[in-house]
Amino acid sequence: MKMDLNAIIEKMETGDQDAALTALQTFNKEKSQCFSFTHGEEEDREDGHSQEHLGELVLGFLERDLQPSCQLACLETIRILSRDKKSLAPFATRHAMQILIRHAGLGQGEGITPEIPDLEVIVEALKCLCNIVFNSEAAQEAGAELQLIVGLAERLKQCREPQWNHDVRFFDLRLTFLITALRVDVRAQLARELRGVSLLSEALDATLSLCWPDTYEVARAGFDGCSELPPLGRQETERAMEILKILFNVTFDSNRRGVDEEEAATYRHLGAILRHCIMSTSEGEERTEEMHSHTVNLLGNLPLPCLDVLLMPKVQQGSIEYMGVNMDAVKVLLEFMEKRLDRGNKLKETLLPSLNLLTESARIHRETRKFLRMKCVFVSKQVLPPLRDVKNRPEVGNALRNKLVRLMTHIDTDVKHCAAEFLFVLCKESVSRFIKYTGYGNAAGLLAARGLMRGGRDPGHYSEDEDSDTEEYREAKPHINPVTGRVEEEQPNPMEGMTEEQKEYEAMKLVNMFDKLSREQVIQPMKIGADGKMTSLEPHEFHYLASQQFGESNNSDSDSDTN
Image 1 (tube, helix red, strand yellow):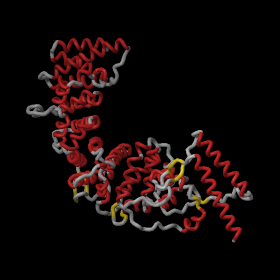
Image 2 (cartoon, helix red, strand yellow):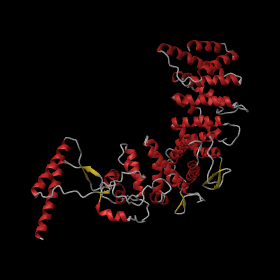
Image 3 (cartoon, helix red, strand yellow):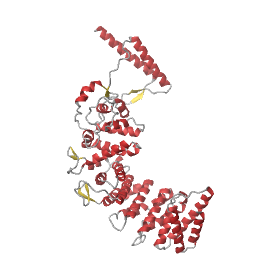
Image 4 (cartoon, helix red, strand yellow):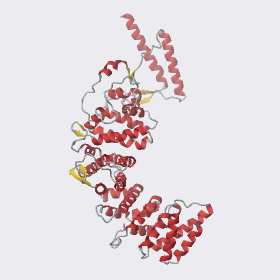
């Protein structure tokens, strides 16, 4: 490569456009699939200098008035060189970024973009910017200073104009995603100053070719009223996913702050489009799931009151109706969540967004909660059907409830907390009902964190409809072990036949064992405090509790003898 680079550099140094074009085209063809320029240490060091020098020469050429083919060759060379972080120095400067931004048609000011832009040149410049911004903090800073996001936003406004092809639109979006992901200030600028949510919602609307039968009801143009939509095309899906990713960046904190009436309307408008996304398919199951994943992630960022748009569309023929509400979107979200749950890979990243979304939807929408809890007969498993199986532990089995209860003891704290929270909300945050469906042992973690170990109920906006028990449950209830949540065979009393002195001896032996393990810091005994939360049990308290217990036991025996 060293000889090739030197030969190319010599041709470039002549300044002749035709000679440079031939040399660069040869280099680009040879290195088109090269993503690493690493060789031996000495050779690598020399090649690094040569690559940087070549980069500087190419940038110099781009400042000249070149024919489009030579512009394209120069940009292709920059794209190839910018894959190597060691060769980035010439391209990460403010001046180099200005050159590339101008060739991408994103510069600010008069006369920056030609009247008839060369789309191939623009796309190649955008690819260069994507590489450089992704790999260089200096380039990110330069892009922010040069108001790159303003140029991108201006072209996003032209989302319905036919002059821009798919590649220009796609790499505009990819560059927007990168700069907003890597620069918090640019993200904030797009969100607030440039009204990013409205801008990107309009771009998503245009990409999906939507029409609006009602304020918050969406259809695809030409397919209004159709029960089944054709899959989205590959290009539309690619652009839609990039927009969803950018919107995720700019709405990252929206569900943690208050929104005014105007913002709420904007988010509801976006939510209606997202409902359409979750109800749409793409070419192939994998691509469909990827689009749904980005949609679910973004729905989780929306202010909670704005999620009501998921339930707003009118019930039509073929729709799933419950309590007069269209539950199609909730059904799809539940199916998506269960598919991720069954897969079992990287649950924190793949499962929690959909599980959190369903939890919050159920918390604020009674119809959604009741549908998820009792009426999900449209998916393979119900979440919390009427309880009939009382012979098996709640975590045993393949029902959706069993799978979720198993997650409540997952090694990952976030996973087990979210699974428990979902079931707790479906139980209307009632401790007794929660224990009924999960068992006290599985429920203890959430109850301890909430200060509900003594029972009771968290305050919430829940109706007072009764939790009707099945006949099987009512018959078995007196025999259910609340810790395991199932009927267990009656066990013999281990203290049967012992005298009171023997019982006290065994009890004190147990207390002393706990005391020893506690002092050696093997275990930390706990008790339930007055606030319902767990607190440490001090060693001296063991003996007091034991004496109290046996004092009560002896008094009880004395009373019975007297009677």
